[in-house]
Length: 431
Image (cartoon, rainbow, N blue to C red; front, side, top):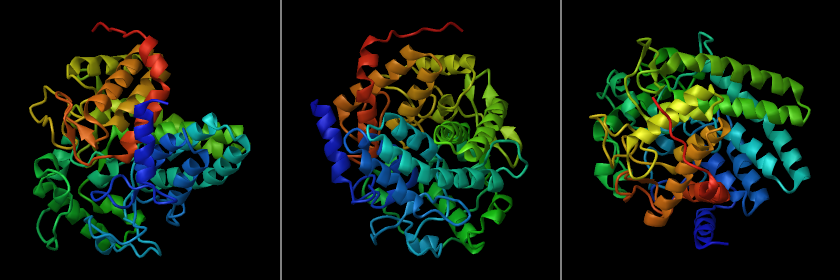
């Protein structure tokens, strides 16, 4: 057992609250949706049962329409804003009213595949299958009104990439007037110059208050918001999860659930091609209100490699990442973009969870060397800078929260691939 492994396990246990984990003390004191699903992967390396519990706790707070909220406020804590009083969703255990990337299907498939207790894994996976399928169904019923096979996010927080350059133009349509006075808490825990701006926060809050005024009726929100963006990374995660859930359902004999998820994945994979940009060598977001692609080369367009995309597309994405030229991979915005900000949240920094999903997707596409290069870079970053929330891609400076849960979880995942990282050659591609 290496020192790095022990340090990662220590952080996961430190942030464990019994049946769920918090991302980090102070800055994020509740349970976050995709954090928990990715955290479970790390937990599975040392406590399989606890890993299943992490995801089960999240789905215990699924809404009756199938949505899984992005935050569950298990216990009161005034260190985070906006808290449950702002969301006012009326849930028995308070939750937010929006969702996050649907990575659960991928996570439970991976937990099942690596399980040593096969009986426990089958029982617990079988119980989660209809719940995760209901969430997938909710997406296509409420966020894909024209049935194109791709879903829209209605709030930047849903993407997990809160202040990405991708949202700037569409977000400009969201008003900043008329919101209730508020006091941010994030800038009390992390450097303000590394966080989203006040203008971003004003628009975030306008959308929350707007949706709250509609009583969080998910059948109405898509048509009622000025912000509708089809994010390739968000959709790739949903597509991959649907494909993985279909495989798992087939293994467990749940053929109806398998067929439903297979249909979502097949249609989504085909529709994802409408977001490809040959000029940029990656996928782009689309502003659904305008019907136009958004000229922004973010990690969201690289994260599309997580889905079962054509091998040629994956190879081009690997080439695009190679072309970033930063010391550490993968920058959340192309470094030669004038809007790139090396230390501001999702406008430049490296995030290990994104690295992990891109590396996984590239490996599945047969690009072992490209995947290994990201794995090596990620572990080098941790050895250089510790377990931070995110990192400067040029210097490796740690940014945001410290002793971060999903960073630790991803380190355990990357360490499991260490032999591959040491032995796989780097590929090189020609334009």
